[in-house]
Every structure is written in structure tokens, then in C-alpha cells.
Image (tube, rainbow, N blue to C red; front, side):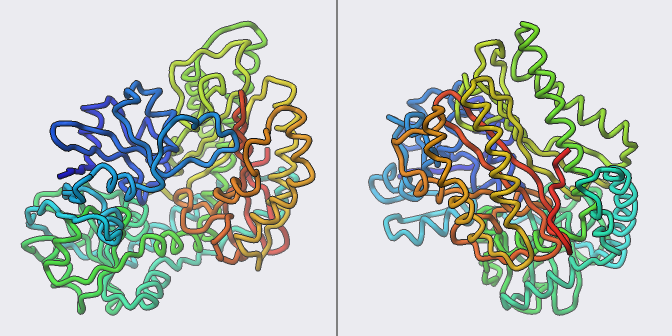
Amino acid sequence: MLHLTADDALVKQHYGLDARRSLLFSAIRLDSHPLVSPLIAERGGERTLLVRQQEQGNALSAGVPKEQIRFYAPWVTIDPRVVAGIPVAGSLTELVAELADDGRVHLAANVVLAHHRAFAASGALEVTVDAQPPTPVVAHEVDTTAVLARFAEWRAGGAQVARRLIDGVEHLDGLAAELPDGEDTRFTALTALAREHGLDAVLLAATPNHTEVTGQGRPENAVAVWLPGAERLVVLAPEGTSGLPGTPIGRHASFGAAVTELSPGGRIGVEEEFIGIGFAQELEQAGGELIGISAALGHWRDVRDREDLAFQIIASRTSVFAIEAALAWAERGIEDGREFTELDIYAVYLDKIVEFRDENDIPFGVEPYFTNLHSSNRMLFPGPPVDFPINRDTTCIQLDAGVRVVAGGVTVATSDMARSLPRTEGAKEAYAFFFDVVRDGIIGQLRPGVVCQDVHEGTLKYLAPHLDRMRQIGVLGTEVDFNTEYRKRNVGHLMGKQESFANELRPGYEHVLQVGSFGAAEIPWRYDNVAIGTEDLWYVGRDRTYIVSQW
């Protein structure tokens, strides 16, 4: 029988791989990192690490032996040479079915519920699960009026900072008038979500969702429960947990008992991409019917982005300053003949974040959210920086990164943008063109009423007349059908408390943009010896769409 576990500590112990620091996707997906983090598969004394192919470069750069890894979820690439000869399964379910040659798989309690559901639905696997011992919990009721007041105070301070940051920036003239006047729909929108899905309770365990309703940092193992019928908010945590918000209202034998005893009915909305199967089965054994709403909760955050525009401005302006300053430092260093490393560039980037915050008297925390910084000499895969040398032989440096703005332990906004330092003539020409693609070809389409998937199709049409030139200058080959491959990935996404995986500019996403939509537009281009990232943050205003991350 194949045994699967999702313990990040064991991944680090056995493979020296820190899933939240060494892997890009695990760092980005704050509300669903258990879904994309590596799994350890064991059978007959043999151990294998199961990793999304998007993290191939990172896993191998971290020193994990290739023979100890199996990859799944093929990475989208316009240069098939970088994945040639690397076996990859179409999905995690396919890979697990292959490894479990007897068709049986046993899951540790920490394997995410979404994986369990996929395995069970495949029909190819017989799935068993570790039971999770019940933990006595305490319940605290949180005053939602106090939560709203807390966010209102932060937003008022954020608006003052945002106005200072964009004052005198010609291309952002008018953006200050878009700053909201105090509207806060977090609870009314959550109740509407619950009614749409017929839910008696909504359980919020993932940090971005938990902090969004409590207005405080999430204590370890705590979950929030929204009871839409009574419009009550309750936080549950193991007995002895300190720092819980609200007023104590009771003790329960387990999380499952607490949720079902508090809820007027059994339909419970859960983050199937975040909670473990052990926790889920505890809820079910207590009588809960679990409805997966991870994507719906992502959408709940996304469509309220306009309410936090001030913080998004802070994040965007910090990012463009820090990223462009770090690459300018790297360019001067190369021209001066100095040799340094990716980590040195990263250190400058971090310093520039602090410099921008200090010089602009920003009273909120501004911290790294994720960092994709690498030389194309090292790899074309996206990944965090390592101790790799940068010198005159460097062909391109890509810095695709985001910060998060933090108030009172709560992430109130994040950013995601990219700049590059191309070093070859072909890469320089392509990079200049990609700014036209991002700012005219993608952002130029964005206005109220536009459908996300239509933006992707419009981008491919914009690119089409230029593909032959990309081939002529050596940044595109004829090995793949470009349009077919690029339809597998997005050209942007909405952006708020994290990069959105609920609303992307890609085929199959039918969300309609509205006044107040905020997001990122990007063209990642990795071919041969260059990995170029060009990405800007945009905001759909009443009269026009702003490029908030353009300096």
C-alpha cells in the first residue's frame, strides 16, 4: 500500500527543502498552499517526493536528487528543451495511481481534502485515511462591529499615505478620487456567498480568509466560523491557545462538535484546498455535510478589492521602486565588472523596500510576499534566489516579486509585478516589446464589462503579428504551437490579499471586470538563455484604467 503525507517538516528533514521558502507556488498561494506543496510517498521502505513540475528548477537547485523526485502537472513552456527527458504525470491523481500499483493508498490526516476527493473520484484508487484525534476547543464570539471599526481606522490611515505616494504622478492623476469612502462589504458579501451555496455555516481556516473576518492575526490552529443566519462570528481554537479575539462563550469536545453545535444546520462551507482530510472527517463524523468553497472565497476577496485600493497603491508603489532599484544596482555592478550573486540582488531589493517605507513615512508593515529572482544562466524555471554568480556572462535576470502590506498582523494588500535585466540584443528588443504587450495589448483591453477569458484571446491576437520577429531575434522557436501552449496559462489575474487563482485572465474564466477591479497583467517569456518577466499592476477606474506600478 502506498502511504502519502503532506508534512512540510518531514519534507525539510528528508530533503532539505523548505516548501514555504524554497518553492515559489507554495509561497504565493496563501489560502491553498497545502494543495500545491510536495507530498512524500512511501511504499516498501522506499520514499519518493511528489512535486509539481512548476517547481522542478527549485527542487533540483535545492539539491534534491533527481531520482528521488516524481513530477506531476506539466509546466507550461514555450521551450520544450527545459523539460525534455523529465517524466511528468498529467496530474497528482495519475501519479499516485501509477505509484500505487495495487490501487490502494493511505493518507495521513494532513493531506488536503481536495486531494482526497480527487483520489476517491478517480475510480482507480481505494483510499483510506488516518483518523485525527479530537482536540477539546474553546469558542470565542467576535464583535463584528469592532472588526469593521478596526479596518475603517486602518483604511483611513492608508488613504492618507496613498494620496501622498501618487501626488504629482502624472499618469496616475485622478486615481486619488477613486479611493473609497468607507464602504465595507466583507460580512454582507460573506452572507450572500453562504446563501448562494445554501450554507448553514462557513468555516475559515486559511490565513487570508481568517484574518479578513477577524481583523487579527490567526493564532495557530484557530478557525473562524461565520453563521450567516444569525450574522455571528465565532473563533475556535484548542484549549490553552492565547491571543484569541472576542469573548469566551463555551467549550466543546472537538472542532467537529463545536461547528455542528453552533450551526443551525449541517451544510458547512469549507476550504477544501486548505484543510486536511483528518480535520474534514472530524467535521463529517459530527454530522457536517462539507461543501467546498475555496474558489468562492477567493472570489469573495477579489471582488472587494476596491475597498482596499489605498493599500494596493502602497504595495504597488513600493514594489516598483524596490524592484527597479535592485535591477539598476545589478546592472551597474555588471558594468563595473563586479561579481556578485542572486542573493546580493535580493538583499538590495529588501533594503529598498525598507528605504521606501521609511522615506515615505508608511505606518504599516511592508514585507516580502514572494520573490522569483533568478539568472537565466541558472534555469528558465521560476524560483527564489540562490547563491548563484552574476557577472558579464549573465544573459538575463528576472525579478518577479510582491510585497504585502500588514496592519495589526493582518495582510491588507499584496502586489505582484516583474521587471527584467536583459543582457543580449535579442532579449533587449523582446523586453521592450513586452512592455507594449502588457500596457497596450493587455491593460489596454481592461474596462468595465470585459470578460477575463476574452482578454487572453485579445492578447494572443496582439502578439500574433510579432511572433515571426521573436523567432528572428532568437527568443522563440518553432518547436511548439505558441497559441496552443500559451492558452494553458494566464496573462494576468486579479490581485488583493494574494494572487488570485479564482479570477484569472485566461481561457475558461468568465468573471466580468467592473469598476474597482484590481490585478496584474503579465507576459512571462522563457526561451533558450533568457527568462524575461514583464508585469504591471492595474486598477479599473470610473473613467479609465490606471497602471499603478508604472513609475
